[in-house]
Image 1 (cartoon, each protein chain N blue to C red):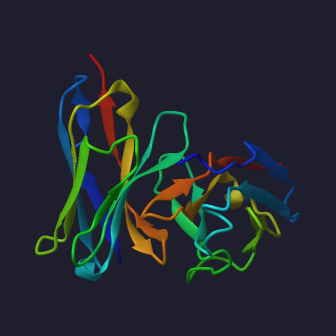
Image 2: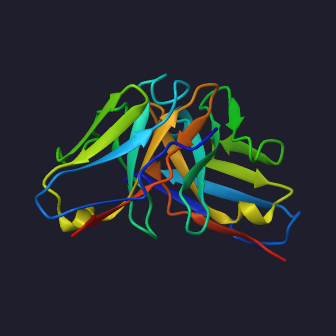
Length: 110
Length: 117
């Protein structure tokens, strides 16, 4: 149950796009289409932004999109806004009734 | 509005026990798998445990297997996490969350568990 690999930080100016990667293995990210992404403002409850690789829950802006290629999943935030500044975590089902998260990426809006 | 409210956190000595509760409202609790996820100070999210909706099948991260037990009471819309043989490294904010297609759609605000002598 090794953590998925995310860059520790990412940044972009308002209006720009930024992509956060999430690298796993054949046992998790590429083995299942159950990758999800979470936005976490410190002190608050995490929020589901993307599930099943590229599906958005109701209420999540379409500026947020997800994709996957091989062992790497990605979250793209387009048209960056100040309120997008937060920690972002990926997660994947890892088989045998286990789940794994990434280490988190701190997104800074410059 | 869906609400998940954790309780039962606190300070405990190494080797001690604690029981967390998570009360759910605003959803059909008996149909939802439930998870516990934790976040140690300054660290990332880590999945801890899951319980299914009907036959109550459970699973655990290796780091807590044999020490933690997840359970639920569908009549009270509540999920529990019994934590025994606690270690300093179990210190974290513990979140309960509902399962949505193998992701986690609703989260509580978290309960702080501090293991220290």
